[in-house]
Image 1 (cartoon, rainbow, N blue to C red):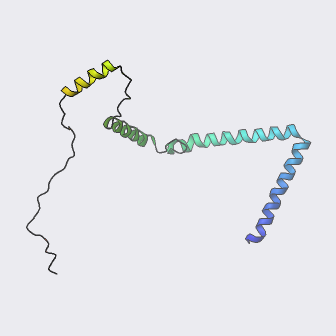
Image 2 (image 1 turned 90 degrees about the horizontal axis):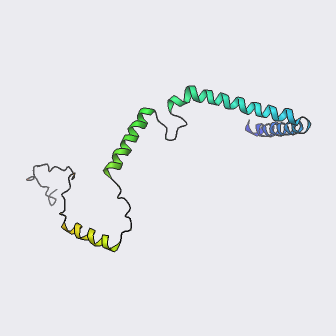
Length: 135
């Protein structure tokens, strides 16, 4: 079935190109106005479909998803930025200012980490060790 369909399709495409060429040379203004009208109607139909159906589902957006998911994502990004703050780029200072900052940084004490890893040691039954020598 596929063997005889291919020449038929190529013939139809060739005829379409031939008749579009004839229309373009014989009635140029009518052809161009019909093309512009078809493009305008297609854009209106696509806009209506997008506005009424696809917009609410989240298709066509930058990241997709609905509004609630986007809110959660933005909140997570904000929290992540607060947690891992990037140091601000250092502005070039004069040698006098560098000496002052070195002196003040030496006087500071090392602060403990406030948010260390939350690890817990679980006490188990350590007396039961595997004896690998016996089978």
